[in-house]
Image 1 (tube, rainbow, N blue to C red):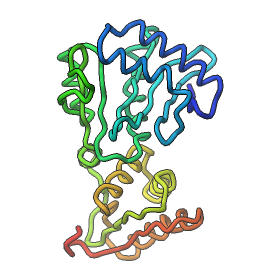
Image 2 (cartoon, helix red, strand yellow):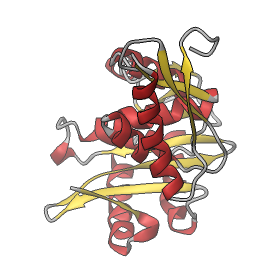
Image 3 (cartoon, rainbow, N blue to C red):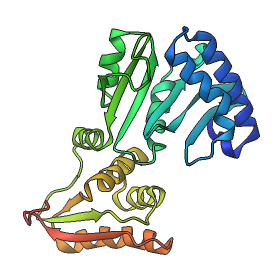
Amino acid sequence: MAAHFTNQSTEATELASALFREWLSELPEGVLRSHVAELALSFQELDDTRLRLVVHYDESGPHCIHGAWMFDEHVEIVGPYVPKAVRRQGVGKAALHHSLRLSWSMPEVYLLAAGNEPWRVEKLEREGFIACDSVLPGGAGEHQTFLVSVEKRAQDYLRLLREPRGSGSWAVVLYNDEETTFEIVVTALMYALDVNDCIAYEYANLVHHCGYAVIRFCRTEWAAKRIARSIRHIAHGAGFPLYVDVERSGNGLV
């Protein structure tokens, strides 16, 4: 199952249209259905500065549609819509995480869901979302609205995994800049810290929203500098000025 951006693939665009029709057939009349219908009609006309829409599919057919939509000065998660045939297989959860990565690094992201299901509140709380007032004109009605603070979600996720790893009096600190892309930061952290893309992405989020983040503790200055050099090597080699430093624990930052 591969992910395809609709603005880069004709096949993905056609599948997105089909999935939107299927999705709309399941939504009850009301403000949420009208909202999704508006997007279904216009998504092919929106560039990736307003919409990042992804379809997951393989030879067996489409698996889900999801994305992030810049709408009225905020970002909403589009979907994820999962066809009935592949529900309860973890597809929606994976798509939800992917959607957050597409959200232009906005500090807050909204998720709109059909119905009024009590189980959904508990399930989404585990992903960092909290129930809130509707962002749609006309109120919540037949749908629920959830809000996630990207910074808090990153902090909670990393804390759960006991990140930053390591111990000692030397800390590797990554700083934000306005030029280095998320993709380069994630790639550099995956390689230098030996972590998966989810951990690397949440570190990138934390740095972006807080200005800096401690990403590893080390027992020796030499070990900390080796990690910092690895990160710089990848970023600078790609032409980006990513700034990473080595500092003593207890200096006010750590």
